[in-house]
Length: 221
Image (cartoon, rainbow, N blue to C red; front, side, top):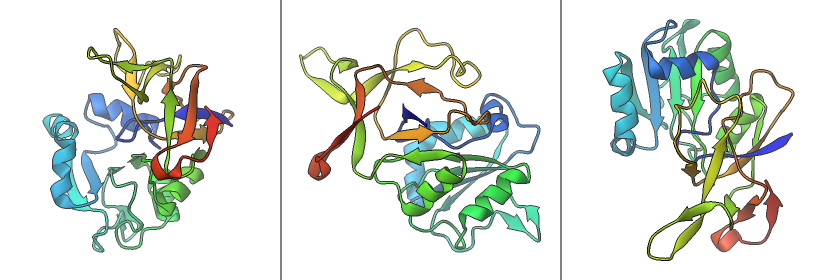
């Protein structure tokens, strides 16, 4: 496995290639999108992302992650074409949805995005593991004392790391004139899995470390 830094919002995700294309244009697999957020009112945090989907003709349904009425399939038929989980810290997703439910959803042609966070819950970690991705321990973050965002007043954020797009990221990222900055948790991925496409990588000085009250150890990225 290799170590890869990830964003805490929407960039580090378990997703299918078909959905990546769907963000740029309407998907051939359908337009129904389920978005799970911690609370419905939290959807405003992702307003630009959601507005982008709506402007492209997607039928977006925003639901609270703990809403017991949320299901992915009804009588064996997909209720949605795409699912976006923007609640990585939730210990329960929908109507007690299991990792098998999400895997079945993808195997049935659905597309899936799961956001990451330094405080990811066990269900979200288990779901990622089913797709060959293992996240770092809770309370950790990617750090880089050499390649990070520097601001004009002389201060800097060593946890806001300058990342480089991988050679395989062209279908995912638009052309960038400069570095992509992110702040989040790292993960390992199965490098021999042809279905996994690394998007961003850190430099040789990038590493993963415990932060805040969890600051006890560090791991090379």
